[in-house]
Length: 278
Image 1 (cartoon, rainbow, N blue to C red):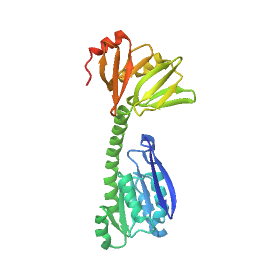
Image 2: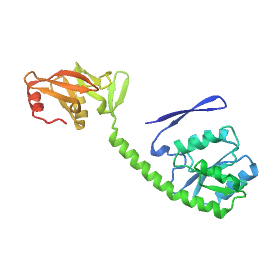
Image 3: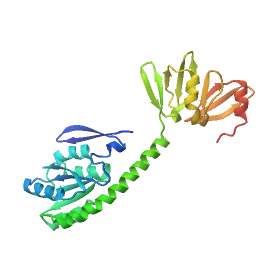
Image 4: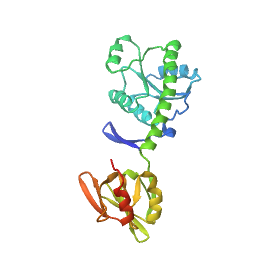
């Protein structure tokens, strides 16, 4: 699932779309490589830090910005592994960019780069625990990069695990319609009803979708997801069955306090009557 975010710079609204897939895990995907963003108003200081970073083979991509207003768009686009932020910050969005990274890009490391130690307390108050003094020493820079690299490897592995878990928890099935196709989570389907050569899908949110697929094909797709055919014209989601009445060949589907009475055929209803439902 993608996440849409809206933010404002100088009164203008911008929209960002985050897609949680492996290929979009930032522009710096290599698990052994680091992508960096330098936010520095002084051109000489910016070039100096960039040259230092270039001396490390683990740093694959470096982007720069002169202030936080420009940098915010780059942060969203690049999803860097580490951000070197001049402090005190230059630009109207200084506090916003720190908060944005900490809440939306929690795996990104923020490093304050300052001329003085007196802002160290500010860094701690803002939960930024990496601090470099200008001119930046290569040994101090190296210590921070060495912490970022293994963390990135762990973060990528965690991301892969989450993607796998998400796909397992949220399977989406493809159903063709007159206009093309639709992707649907089977847990959202309450029951399916044949309408001649078509099948009408009834959802737990009370909506419907008409597909140009035979019910037999729908049944084949849904069988692995705890669906059962109760008549020639109806397939139901067993997860929502609450009552079965074999004498009248009917059952009750229940969701969000609403009940639906569905008519079935004798043999499948007798079989269902012997089934235990949680």
